[in-house]
Every structure is written in C-alpha cells, then in structure tokens.
Length: 289
Image (cartoon, one colour):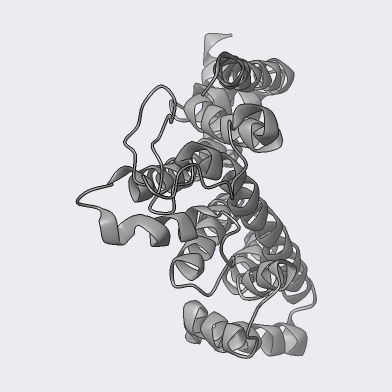
C-alpha cells in the first residue's frame, strides 16, 4: 500500500466516526435515541458498519490493486506486510483489495435481501394480524410451510436450476426465502402492539443474509469467482490455512465483525424501543420531580 492508500484508509475511519457522531447528535433528541446510545454496544456496532460501508464506497481509493489483479503468479501467498496489508492469496491477488471490493458485494447482498425479506414479511404479517379470520389462517399456514422447509435446502434447489446464477437473482432468492419468520413476528406485533420481537427479527435478517451469502459463495453456489465476496475469498484460501492463514482468516474476521455489529445494534434497538424501559424512565423522572 502506498501513502495515498494509507491516508484513504485513515480518512475512511474518520468518516465513519463522523457519521456516528452526527447520527448521535441527531437522534439523542428523543428518549428512545438516548436509550439507544446508552447501550454499550451501540456505538461500536454503528462504527463497524459505517467503516465497512465507507471503504466499500471508496474502494477504488482505499484498495491499492484491482480485485482481479494477479501481482506475481510465481510468488503467491505472500504474508501481511506494509506493501500487502493482509498478504496475497493463492492466486497472487491482494487480500486487502479483494476484501474491500468484496464488502460491496457481501454488504450489498445482505442489505437488499434484508429489505426484500422485511418488506414482504411486514406486509404479510400486517395483513394477517389486521384482517384475521380466514386471511390470517391462510397466510399463517403458508408461513408454516416456509418455516418447515430448511432455507439452505430451498436455495440449493433453486440455484441448481441455473448453471450460472445472476447476482440479482441470488439477492432475490435470499430475500424471498427469508420473510417467513418476520411475518409471524410482525403479526404478533399488530395483535399485541409489542415492538421488541420485531426489532430482533430485523436484526436477525440483516446478519442472516450476510451469513447465507457467505455460505453459498463458499460452496461455489453464490457469487461466481473471480468476483470477490467474503464467502468465496474464504473458499479460495481455506485449503492453504497452514501456510497462508491470512487468505481465509481476514474475510472470516470481516464476516464476524459485521454479524456482531448487526447483533449489537439489535440489542441497542431492543432497549431503545422497549416500552417497558420507557415506562421505567418516565417513573424515575416523575419520582425525581
């Protein structure tokens, strides 16, 4: 990495911190916003997601090499150094550059699939909870069928129908097979006006979409190589873990950080939107007065 890449990386961290600070100033004007940021995992989770989103957007500036560029095919598996921040993979490609460009694919698929699943699940759950009777019965039996079928099995069957699956089809498949649990929780939300379960569902959908894409790509059924995604980066290097551990370890670490960030934000949102905590705050305020 040259000086410009290091400066860009530092700039990405500063932009992420500034985004978190701006968001904090904006939403702490409300009681739920203050409860959200009082949770110990809120700021770290937001920073991790903001950082990965920033480097994904600024990939051409942050990454020193194109994601497909083979640096020296006669000398692959170079260890991490100042020139190659995370080393090179078995195909002599810079791991850091592929990690940065892979963030675009992995986070993009996770975000869009989550949006599709949350939209369909919310709509179905709201309709079932509002109309009830035969509408509720019919929709919930459909949800029962969807929940009874293993999601990964359904995706493997669908992917098997296409020899080379397009990226947008993969995103739709992940989203269209992930709304069943959300719909049931939203239905309960409509019926009982409880917010907590819905927040947990949104959290799980975001983390689950990223993990599912990584799993499919690792099996060779997701994002086709040489396009970088965190899942196929792990697949490229896992067989050389003893001599080039960095090729698979760093993409795996990125997946772990993003999933933990989703879970951290879910915990903070649960506390922020829990009506019982709002009542406790109001009681404490009234007692103090």
